[in-house]
Image 1: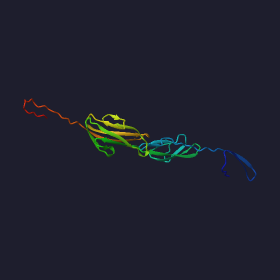
Image 2 (image 1 turned 90 degrees about the vertical axis):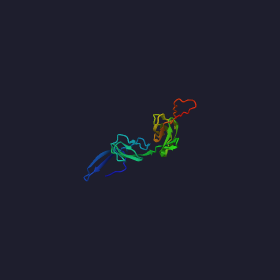
Image 3 (image 1 turned 135 degrees about the vertical axis):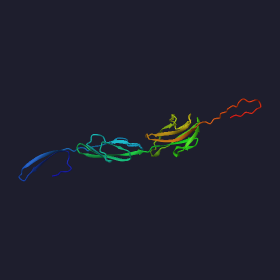
Image 4 (image 1 turned 135 degrees about the horizontal axis):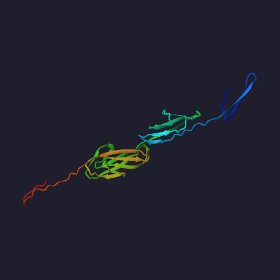
Length: 220
């Protein structure tokens, strides 16, 4: 015989055969609770990054929606990630989490002289020790997360954490000026412009050989 919708407890059944003989047996019924897995980890991360999410330890088996069979899985793309766990009693349950990718901000440099925008490429040229103006800005992207830090690298070993900056170079050459912006989520964006620093073309005057009064001398 089969019984349905019975409760926890001890059940006894007595059977009688065709000869009137009887016997009894008992069964203690226990209903085990379903496992309650909880997925932990970083559920939001920047483009290009990754996160390891875990369903905890102690279950007999795991199967993730990615096909992984460990207690944790590394994720690199957005979407729903589900895990089905089986405990030592053979009870099974499933849970899932949504992973979101945060778009990184886009750093923007406007440089003068030359009115150069780093997104369009190009370079500016300045003379030795001539000031160049750099204005920092950023496109926040879909996250809308505000910029919390600005870092300029002027390529000559000097740095600044101001949003806008004035800088000059003491040595001729080609320099890459880089702006790195970081938003409140920890995502970064980078942009750079090239600066050509030319030597100052000064005027050198060479005096002529001694001349007499009334004569004409040439200066070079």
